Length: 202
Image 1 (spheres, helix red, strand yellow):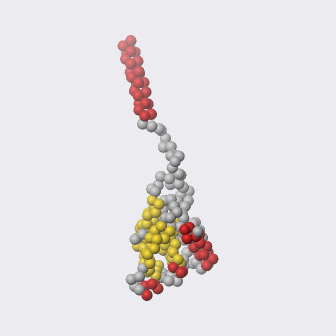
Image 2 (tube, rainbow, N blue to C red):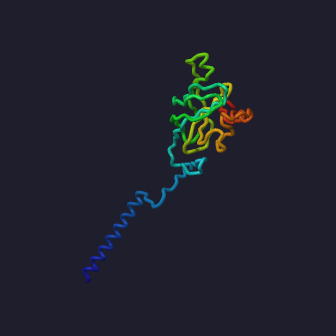
C-alpha cells in the first residue's frame, strides 16, 4: 500500500511540474484564450452601408465599373485605369459587366484614377480621338464591396465616385438622381460642387 501511495504521490508531483512548465511555455508564447485583443493602434473600420465591422477586410477593394452619362452627348468608349467600361447613350446609366478597378478601402486626399473616353461628337470630328486625364476620386466612406462610377456631365465635366449603391438610390452618398431621370440643374450643380477636387476648390 505504501508503494502505491508513494507512486501516486510521485505521479502527482510530476503532473504538477509538467503543468507548471506548460504554463511557463504558454506565457512565453503569449498564449491567451478567447478572441485576440484589438490592436489599439489599428483603427476600427465600419462599413457605412451595413454597419458591420470590416477592420480585418483586405485593405483594397476591387470594384465593378459603372457609367452614368448626364449629358446629351453619347459616350463611345470609356476606360478607367485601363479597364474597359463600355459606352453609354445620352442621359443613361448602367454597370459594365467588367471588373475591376482597385481602390484602397480608406479614401485619402489625392486619390486619383486615369480615365479615357470618347464622346459621339468627338468621334464625328475624329474617329481616333480620345480624352485621357487623371481624375480625383470623390471622398467616400468605408464600404465592403460595390462600384466605381464614371460620371459624365455637360461641358466635359467628369466625376469618379466609389460607392456600394447606384446613383439615384436613397443611400447613395450624394444627392443626385439616375441619369435618365435627373433634370434638376440645381441638384446637378450641387453634386458637381460637392465632388469638386479640393486642390481646384481652394
